[in-house]
Length: 415
Image (cartoon, rainbow, N blue to C red; front, side, top):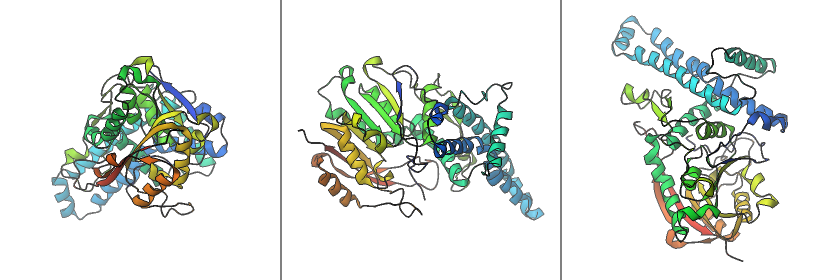
């Protein structure tokens, strides 16, 4: 199943809503401190994510690269010679080296959020290798596997999320999805000059790596992204706080994809990030940019969040709910009377047919009726029935998925 992972399935913890403000200064989520305040389930969830990132190279080489080399070695002499003449073995060995480069990047990413407990992987004298070895020995002693295919899929997905949110290559996809949302938001507050919009508070649930929330802040609004997945939070912390140059880091997000490839160059191509420096917000302290780590419902249904937000912008988010009515109630609670909600996305219900999970799925029309029954007023003139969009697409692949997303603008009535 191809999913747009907004991270609702990691665990049912970290719901206390750690907030990290970013308006030129750092948004510094030190998750080692968070673990001290959480229960055992929470600690295990955090360790599983760290393990997924740190075991990426070993897992990918053993299950993807070395297996393919062995398959070629098992061929008859004639077939092996033909394959070798194509350069296929060289391609796989090149992929091996690029997986190692991805691991170096992921090590830096993890260190950015665990700086108090993990040696610097960029410093050869720091003892990082010994620390990492001890980390996995501890997991083994506790009866835990190093990682799983489920977590490795999330690591691969995160690499592609960097392309979607923070690479020039993702510009077209961002224009497809974020573009209409940003345009609708600016239309809603066109009567306020950008330099005076700092008092307008905009919430972005399921913020992922934070680009949409960042773009909203760049337009003068005070923007807060909310994210539940530690995979996304580690990555957003890294790109928002630990990059100091344009295109500072190079990743190889498609090196694992051996199917539907046209040219070798397509599979091993580098992608540079970030395409913009997130530290450079145009309106300075007048527009605040922050990220919260935790469950959307837990954080924004709290008493101190009642009637706090002028706008909510949701992108590929609503279908991450087990019970979307709980999302709607939370949004209603958090929005000021007269506030606007702008939504774009499909309805790929994330918990549909997931064993052990309770989930309620609705058609698009049923969902829209629910929105109205909760009390929201939809602007029929701004309803878009079908917008063709992709999600973390590899635009050079022979296989392309297209969502026919819908978009609407709704309001919470004034008192």
